Image 1 (cartoon, rainbow, N blue to C red):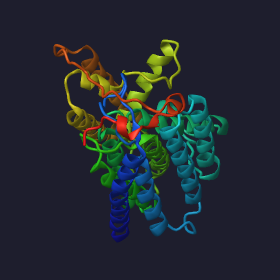
Image 2: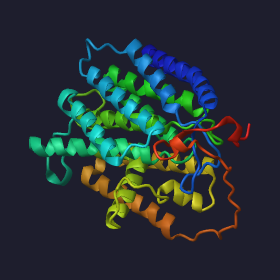
Image 3: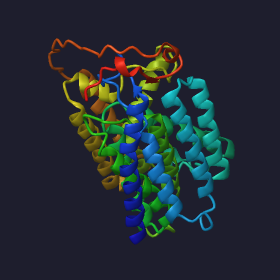
Length: 379
């Protein structure tokens, strides 16, 4: 337990100390995430918070997790480093969906073929157990890429991705601690500490965003932890055995996964790329109902806690029945959100600060360097 507390504390302190320096550099260099018609914020805000999260997470894991006793972790760290720099480049330069997808495939390949993070069983779902290698590899790739993008897409409201990531890290970290897998527990709590340090500056009104460098890394770590959780918790050999591990694992990530599957399905149905941006996410629907940032974050967080509680207390019903209950509950929530009575819209004069970015940055960057005398930012 002492190492859990140390890892949590070190990652928190490092991130908490790093974020103000990152905000200062972003202000000095005029590096901002610019507001537009699709985005919610109304003034330029730095979106490099993932740098602080990475610093706290990476250094604390290097301090307390030994690669000698956990050889697969070197591949986890390699994958995390790649996905961090992919996100960082996307925070500064506009990357095409194709390039991001190729990099995510490479990261998934590292985890599956070198790190041993793979799905090789259906754990009784629909009566299936052991999977052929080709199907297991394909399902593993799909799961990793889905979860990576899920936390990237849910990052649209102050504190939302960070709070959902913190929730999953605490749940997985606690389970692995009780199950006798301390290294995976430390991995989860290292990210939890970094997220706590970051969230102090990310709650509404946010002083900084985590950006893709942060959200993609949270998704990557969750993909590692949930697949490991399903493979371990379903085994009777572990000290803390759980029935219906697949359902519980899905419930821990339910809100981001539900949101991603929904928007991807709608975009594909309309003949668009699943990675094309829009304002059709769960947090957008909640904002349209009049909730502010804090209430949207609290609503999604409590909803995810409800899914976890439902899965945990319903685990003895079996994986198939439990998944049906989770699916019905999620569809019920979406039905209320989509078809429930909405408040009357108020006329709002939306004023976005008149900002003139450097011409050379418009077409190739989304974190834009602005001329100092033309920046209209509230101090």
